[in-house]
Amino acid sequence: MKKTLRYSLFWTLAAGMLSPAAAQVNPVTGAVRDLGRLASAPARLEKADLLPVAGVVGAGLLLYSLDGQIRHAFRKNRTSTLDDISKQAEKLGNGGYDLAIAGAGWLAGKAFGDEKLRVTSLLAAESFLAANGVGTL
Image (tube, rainbow, N blue to C red; front, side, top):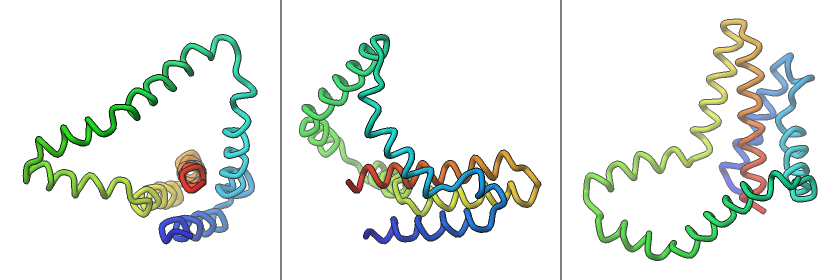
């Protein structure tokens, strides 16, 4: 199991246990439920959904087919400034930052008595788990 995923599971479970909203929003069971809904989503498509889905799939396939050329263009235009920006931007892809933001939101919601912020923060952790689950699979 990836280190980030282990940390995310721990902090998500810890946040869920500390929150009275955990009875309503459990990030782990919510993530599992969401994964099931994602897997069964194609069976629920309606006729009106086909064009937008085809557009997203088409755009994804186009970007996938151009991946080598895009990578080459970025390497060709590489600068030390862009390298510095890239190093900082890369941190945004680290799950620890995502969980820290969700945790800070949960703590702020607790401190200010904002139940909506706490629930939203738990939903953010749930989304992180679902996305990691899909990415890992």
